[in-house]
Image 1 (cartoon, helix red, strand yellow):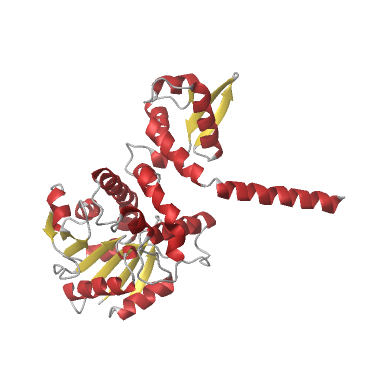
Image 2 (cartoon, rainbow, N blue to C red):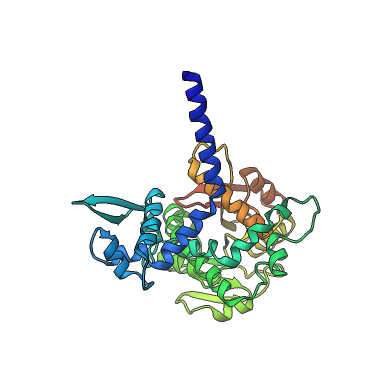
Length: 353
């Protein structure tokens, strides 16, 4: 009887896990919905530690609100550990958690724009073609190309482009303070640094602020550089990284190489090597290091990295393991490198000329 009961409990656990996997996209859309309604920002801006359902209903951006449906949303957010539910004299009140504080719009460290980008209706459509990524036919279109007819970075839709740019900037704001803290010795010895694919210059703005002696350059496509804001101490140059990269003591590549296959990545790294001094030059790569058996990574961190790897698979890119990085750098002509962990999902990989 006891064995039968254990079997039933295991069966129920198995079913529950499968149901959660089946409904996994619910988390993404609930998160996006809560951000768009302003749930987290409203609680923070209220000046009170907690808000009840009526207070939230009267303060959100959507009007009129259907309270019973809002409550169901809040209940799910509580189960996601994004809100805390407290009953005070028979009234249920909701407060922020440490997790939801990473989704506030007015915080430097916020993944709000990433959550909106991942849950974007057009971006979600790409996942319906994920199975095509497993085709044995080499050189075929990526899921993104199958949906939109062109590559991710050639796609010109302004709305989706703005969503993407905001997401990348939010990730930079989250990670760059950790880079500065952990890699200060690397940057302090530089006199010049070029950020290849640096977009609007967010990453270099942190470097200039922490190390004003470094001459920082952002190198990106001309159409990107034309729209970039002005930053004191940062020069913007338009060009093609596959042709020539401006010379500097070091080249910075943030979330860049995971967009490309091995052949293109080797070409980019070789151009980087040409741009730095032979004796003391370096390429500073900020990217994910994917290793499931790394005891230093928690289950949640490994799952997040694996999720981003599949996200990259949708646009024809990939995340790399320690061995992948070693092989890639050696094939690009770098004889020595080191991997430095930081308090972010990415690591810093320093390749020495």
